[in-house]
Amino acid sequence: MATKKTKTKSYERYHIPNLTRALSILEILAKHPDGMTLGEISREAKFTKNSVFRIICTLQDCGYVRKDSDDRTIKISRKLVALGYSSLGEGNLVEKSIDLMRAVRDRVNETTMLGSLLEDECVLIEQVPSRQPFKFMGEIGMRFNLHASVPGKAIVAFLPKSEQDAIIKRIEFKRFNANTITDAESFRKELKLTKERGYALDLNEEIVGVHCVGAPVFDAHGYPIAAIWCTGPSERLKREDLDSVGEFIKQQAMIISNRLGYDLI
Image (cartoon, rainbow, N blue to C red):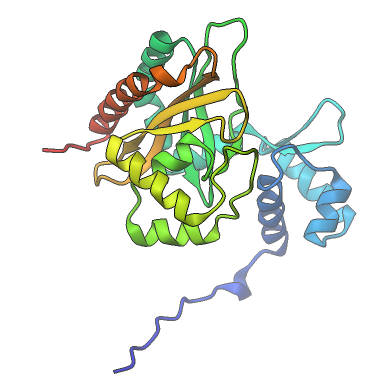
C-alpha cells in the first residue's frame, strides 16, 4: 500500500528578502573559516556588492561578523558561534565540562578541547590551553573534518546507525598524508574500534607529528552530543601513553554525561 507523503508547509510568501540574503551570507562564511572579502562573498552568493555591503554592515554592528586587521577579510564572530551552541543547550555543556577539561589538561599538560557536531563537521566550542611553552590552540568556531579527527570519530562512532551511514556517504575522505583514512570501509572499522574502547585516536592522520585522544559526551538520552579531547606533539603525547590517557578522558567525559542526565544504570 502506498503511503501518503507529508508535505512541509511553506511560508515563502512571507519571507523577508534581506533576511534570507543575510542567512545565505552567514552560511557561506561558515564554509570559509579563514574569512572572505566583500567581492568573494558577492560572487559566491550572487548578490550585488552594494547589497552584500549593507548586510555585512548590519551583521557587524550586531556583532555576528567581524573584520580582520586588514579591514577586508570578513569572518563569523564568536558571538554567532556562542549563540548557535547555546540554542542547542551547549552553553550548559561548557559549564558542566570546564572543570573536567582542566583536570585532563592538568593530567596530560596538553591543550584540552570541547567540540560538537555541526552538519558534516565538528566545531570547537571551548578549550583549556596547555601550560607548555609550545602548545596547540584553536580558534573558537574552527571546524574539524570527521574522518581524520578525534572529535569526528568519537561522536560518529556512537551515532545511531542510520545517521552514521548517512554521514559516511557524504564524507569526501580527503587525504592529508599517508596516515589518513581515505575510504568508507576503513573508516567504519575505525569507528568500530573507537566504540569498543570508548575513545578515539588520531595518530598523525591530519598533521604529521600531532597526536590526539578523546571521548564522546552523551546527553540524557544517550545521544553523543559532543567530545572532549587533548592534542599535542607526538613526541610528548606518545603512542604508548595514549591508551591510559584515553581511559582517563573517557572517565571525565562520562562524568560530564552524568551531569547532563545520562546514566548507564
